[in-house]
Image (cartoon, one colour):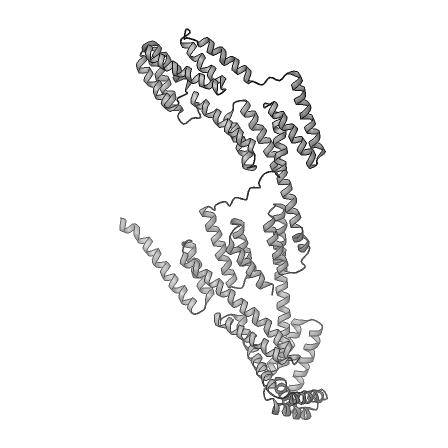
Length: 629
């Protein structure tokens, strides 16, 4: 059975190996589209296959290099043609060589690319132009000037339909410059006109019609006329040049339409991201728009206005944060006053998270935690993880005490006191057990409690001391000096509570109102005076919640509303990661098939799932740079 269970895994692995070998064969033959299709099928079944992922990435890099080389070749080709036309021979040779070198790079990478195959004939003609220019550069300036005059004469004679006379001039030029392209073309045209007048007239008519349509910008119709010329005379350079120019214009128009659609997609995405306050993504969107079409709608103005929107949003967020800080601080004070220590800690922790420099919130957290710990030691509530253990010990301890089994009951209370030395129920019952069964033990234990009470009074914790003394009195009413100790604790408790005289209360109120007036006036000097007044009030009347809240509010505002938390990068789930990867590699597949719009759309879907995906961002930028040619 175990062998049978392993078999599908083996077959699956074997299938992947076979598919990979087939893809490798296509890759070696430079049939990249077929290779990538197989590798994508493997990734569908095994998304985490790093080997295949790297190979798909490699195809994208190869395609990028080919596209950029092709782009450079096309650009240099156009520049070279213009320079040769203006007789800028040295510059023309340089541009021509650059065009041919980049074409060779691109062709070696992907010889099956239809665009490259279409350019092959143009590159061969460019090579002849380069050789002719180099030949001219080798001869004397006087000879070049003579050839230029002969060329002008030949063109005049052709215009006058004196083809025999023009042929003489073209041949003379070729005797000096055998590779001169224009002279070769002129000689060939004259020969056709002399030897086959009918053929020549047909060519001339098609050329004239083609030029007329070209001037009217009817490029498709014009191209058909020049194609007719090429059918009659496949080596006709002028017709070929026109076809190249027309193809370039049609391609430019097609690309512009495509770029306009893409620009609109990015523009709408930018508007949407602004609405969602995703300003960094909106910036990328509008930069993409402008990379595609320089003056598209109001993209420039929107891009320029993003900083202002960021600042305004940050201001609004700061105000909201200040409001939240003040609200949570106030909630914390109220909860602390009501002995809801967990709520107080939670509120002050929110305050500190938003405003890490808030010393008062930190101080109150410590107070609440200390009070909570003391309360937990005295009474284990239902929120404590020890509640069930302690509660069962209390139930059994009380049952044993009621039965008069004091020693057994005492064991239960000792177990509780080992966990919580200040537990009030355990302390009380332990004393009761000792009082009933072990007077000496009771005496020692009660003395230790009284001593702890005395220490509490020295520290000013009169309330805690009072609880301990009253506990002893409840068990042993005649305990020596207990009534005096209780009286001292009560007196200390009264004295520790701030009781303001009416005059002092009026002064506290006067200063508080003055602080509000000063703060309302604004200005650094007035705000400083307001802070001084509020600090005086809180020192004199520590329980003055209004003053504490106002003081905290002003200090938070002076700190700028605390620290803006950096956005947290949420971890992707496995399902999200796999979906993002699928869109990413789909994008590479579209790119390898020259479907750049679809490629960008797929990579944008990656960023919708994983906004921090650097590879997808880089691929979009590279593609936009390429499309912005």
